[in-house]
Image (tube, rainbow, N blue to C red; front, side):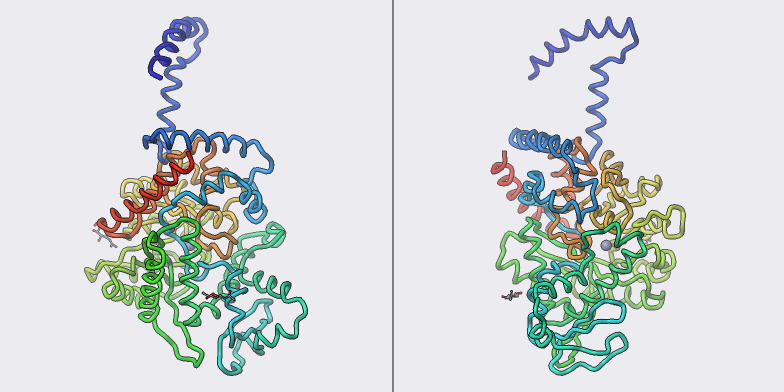
Length: 502
Ligand SMILES: *[C@@H]1O[C@H](CO)[C@@H](O)[C@H](O)[C@H]1NC(C)=O
Ligand SMILES: *[C@@H]1O[C@H](CO)[C@@H](O)[C@H](O)[C@H]1NC(C)=O
Ligand SMILES: [Zn+2]
């Protein structure tokens, strides 16, 4: 290697000298140096790969060249159209096997595939359905005929309804449609952000009646961990409002019940899957609430964090940023922990917008002013040099969710995602899936594919993947000692992944 390099230099340098003298051609050695220096700045650019990793990297590079030359190029398509192509991709299949560390940005109400909700949950006894005037559905488990309510005039027992319907497969498919954004014609059906967000929120409301039933929530969390584990994800930080859950007889459980249940389910899952590391909650409230309500929520979250230090990671505000209230609007509420000398780490969604220069666009700097630990999305970060600088200096990672940004219409061709810039300069970053059930994904592999192939392009390599995965542990909310343990567990998985695939 060294020898051949010297040989090359001996042969070329005099020639170059001559060329440079004669026609001003830049020095190729210097060119080479500059190119390598630039690549070294990208995510993972400074990692040294082992010989086995280099072998896999070369293989990945060849695969990527092939996929970039083929048509259609999946990251250029809407994910709903790209999905079947991605599923056939060799890179995707490798990414599925890759130990991906942690999922740090997923919402609890869209953790589990809609398919499971319909095929499993709606077939359980006592499940009622109601069709609303605005072409949506509501579900409710009850041991008697539910009373009509403002959004639901007539409840039908699903079991009896299914007995009267001939084509139950088609009926189940129509239910799945109500619980996800998936459609064959995304561009026609969702002409703009308003329309897609409206359907998005409707689907959340439709799901709520199923998931808020206490015995279902238990199985739902377990199933969610199962889906992540199958995709080689070992740890989860789940954003959840810990909304009230109900029993068949109408008994209501509070947040403490939900936290305890979450803890139980997680430890049962770990018992059954010793290579799973665990799960924590980021308590989230909707940004449509008023200051007074958010103050109460922050106060409650401080207490819950104290009482459940191993489960509660921190706090966030959720809901569409463009139409919701800004972080600054909630400043009195968000200053409470500092005022009280209490600890409540923040994990704010910020910059999930393309409305440059508006009040909403200031959420990025405000999130940093409130000492956020990570930035959810940070789609607008590339346009905020100061916020970018601060987040880099303080190691505040961006949670990049490529498919979410595309489906919710911030970007159409993922090669144009602004995170390409962040990746090429090695900005602290992790990959996540945001709302997997809504977008028809499970695990993180689809989002890794889009980030690695579409956003990263040909220059993103195995080092990029490795750094993104290590980041997911590094930037998690785990205390250092647990991070070390998670990292050791991951390293073992990674080593066997490399040796099995190189
Ligand atoms: C539904 O899921 C539960 C576990 O969550 C499982 O025990 C049961 O077998 C599933 N039922 C069906 C019909 O798939
Ligand atoms: C943010 O951190 C700084 C430095 O540690 C501290 O002085 C400030 O009070 C914190 N602000 C909030 C809102 O927590
Ligand atoms: Zn989100």
